Image 1 (cartoon, rainbow, N blue to C red):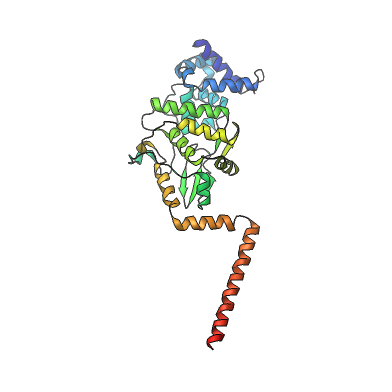
Image 2: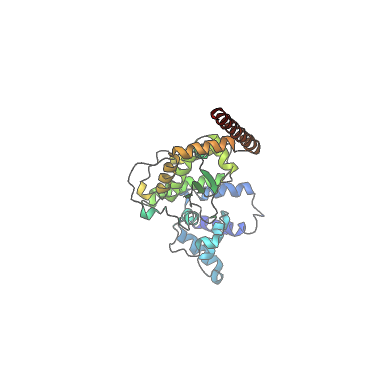
Length: 301
C-alpha cells in the first residue's frame, strides 16, 4: 500500500509536467484503474506520504486535493475543494465530491422532497423536442449535476462521455449505493439521462445541442452506458433531487395544446423554406377568405 501510494503521488506530480516520460494511453488506462472502487487506497495514507515527501512545502492538505483532481482533468479543481468540509476517504470519494459540488441550487432540492412513489420516468429527448420543449446546455458550468426546467426549457449539464468518465460514473453510482444512504445525486442524474437517451436519434440530438460529447463509440454505446448503470437501480423518490423536475416535465408534456403547437412549429417553422411556404399559404388562405366574404356581401346586396 505504501509503495502504491508513493507511486500515485509521483504520478500526480508528473501529470503537471505533461506526462513527458509516460505514454498517454498508459496514463488513460491508469486513470480508469484508480477510479475503480475495489482499487482505492485510504486517502490518509496518501496524505501522509505527500507530507513526508514535500515536508514544509506541503502547506495544506489542499495541495494534494488539487494535484489529484488535475490528474483527472477536473475543471477548476481549487474552486471545487477550497471549501471542503469533509475529509475524502479515497481518490474516488474526492472525485465524487468534485463532481457533485456545489450541490444543485435549483428548486429541485433533495432535502425538500416528500415523494415516496415509484421511479418517475420522462419522455425521451426527441419526444420532448417534438412536443415543443426545448433542451439546452445549462450555463452553470461548475454544476455537473445541475438540471433546471423553466418556461418549457430543460437545462442540462454538459457531459463529456469518454472512457474515463464512463468508469467514473459507474463506480460513483456503486459508491453511493454503499456509502451515501438516501442522497444519490449521481444515480438520479444517470437515471434522468437514461430516460432521455432511448434511441440513437436521442443521442444524436443531444450531441448536436452540445449537451453531451460522445467519445466512447457510436450512439448505441451511449444508450448502453446509461441503461447498464441504471439496470436494477431503484431510487427512493425522496432522495431523487430530480423528481420534482420530472413531474413538471410530464405535466408540460401532457398538455395537448403545447403538443399541437410544438408539432406545428417543428413541421412548418423548422427551416427558412418551410417558414416561407407557410407564410405564403397563410396569405393565400386570407385572400381566399376575403374573396368569399366579398362574394357573399355582393350576393346579399
